[in-house]
Image (cartoon, rainbow, N blue to C red; front, top):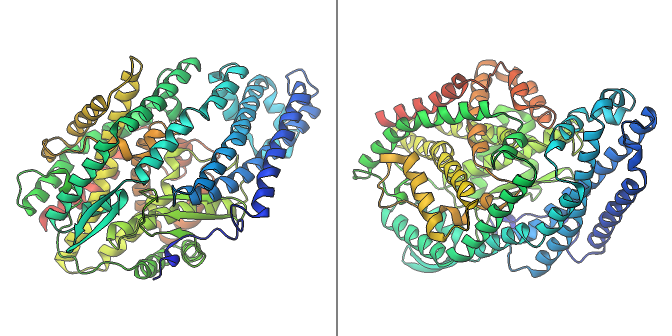
Amino acid sequence: MSANSLRWNLSNVYPGLQSAEFTAAMAHFAEQVAALEHLLDERSAGLRPGAEPAACALLLGEIVRRFNALYEQAGTLGPYINSFVSTDSHNTLARRLDSELDLVNVRLKQLGTRLQSLMGGLAPVLDELLSLDETVAAHEFALREMVDQSRYLMPEALEGLAAELSLSSTNLWSNLQGVITSQLTADFELDGKVSKLPLPALINLHSHPSEDVRRRAYDAEIALLASVREPLAACMNGIKGTTNTLNRRRRRSDALHGPVDESRIDRETLDAMLGAMAGSFPVFRKYWRRKAQRVGKERLAWWDLWAPAGEIKKAYTFDEARGFILKNFGAFSPHLENLARRAFDGGWIDAEQREGKRGGAFCMKVRAPRESRVLCNFDGSLDQVSTLAHELGHAFHNECHYAAGKTPLQSDTPMVLAETASIMCETVVMQAVLAETTDPAEQLNILETSLIGDAQVIVDIHSRYLFEQEVFERREGGELSADDLCDIMRRAQMATYGDGLDERYLHPYMWTWKPHYYRSDLSFYNFPYAFGLLFGTGLYAIYQQRGAAFIPDYMDLLASTGEGRAADLAARFGIDIRGRKFWEDSLGVIGEKIDRYCRL
């Protein structure tokens, strides 16, 4: 396929960054934010407990509709600009426009904080307001959550100041980390040819069949990241220090308090899941010891973690990946297949590896055209086919919101449930690969690919959780050096990987290129991945029992993820997420794969 066919297309959103349509949309967004500011300035007294109930409900309904309209605009402009920023960090126009949009988004965030504060005051009369206005009633969950979380707000002036300061603090630290890591390249010899490879391409070589290639790629990656460790340590300190300060001011008990609330779970649920995960580490170490035997070692080095096993009979072209995904999505649900076909045929996917493009993969909801966009760095491996299916799962989740007519406030999904559809789609594809393969050598390779992903989401995610927990705690006492961060990362990896890895060859610089560490609004964006994998695994088991009858309930669950707590939504399927048994049962499914792997 041509390079252009591997790049996404957003021309149906706006013709270009310099087009009249885009310029007008930016101006209109700013105007509408100003109009809502004026409305709240002039009429917020009408949102007080003593106000006449019918008038108060009418005003609240109008404000909710305006917020939804603004979130629709922000959810179109933001992804459009990000489509340029994330794929070409040299695009100075896109970066400037991103900064301009941030200025307006900060004002919108301040308005959201004002509404949340006002909702706290309306708590005594909310039940009556819900009965007086259809829009208010339709957004009951979001409004009740605002009431609950209003207790953690600073005074309005301080919240406004914090939002404004984010433009010259946390936002810029995050942008700097993205620019630095996206522009890293190294000369690398592969198949007798020396090429300049970007960091994501080096990382993808983790799964190369040759240990010499894997180790040289690891060495090159470590050298690149070591060369930028000081500015990235400054970014980390800036983000975590600011977050700690705001958490204290907002009377949060610790850095984990906010992410747990935002995930719509409780500590009991998190502790049950993390405890079950820690209990599974010996099983994963059994897998790594068997893998070490296969590669002729006593223990694995870091660059062996992604090493393939068995016989690799093919590398996928992008067109082959497309066909395979469509076929197996169709076997699961025609709705899912139709969504994926729109994505492939509509230019929703940017799959090409290139310099200036961010590493990893993600999916963006693009609100106005009711579409999504997927970024990945496709290299033909089965792992990348799985990644593509994963991100298309996010797009399907978005589609369920669109199809159900959910507003932005109704579809605001917590982190833990945001991974549900993506894990399901990944599981569908990997199960299909296994089912179609009878050759033991190929089965071994497929199991290896699947277990590599499982280990990353259970064991490595736990190491990232431990790392971030200690960083937050120690940042309270002062700035952390790059050496400190590397030491914390090493110890977190040893606590989780244990004797499954050779302690001489870990990855002390994992903290440098994971973007979630550098987002002040995504603290602890690690445990949600584990939640998603284990919750999705449990749901897949229910799908295997119920078949096609499962699909309507599943789609309804996805459409409802912005309007319920995780425990309540899980209970629809008879799942108790506060007890360890559910998590241990899901981990047991992975354990069975490890046993099968060890027997081959």
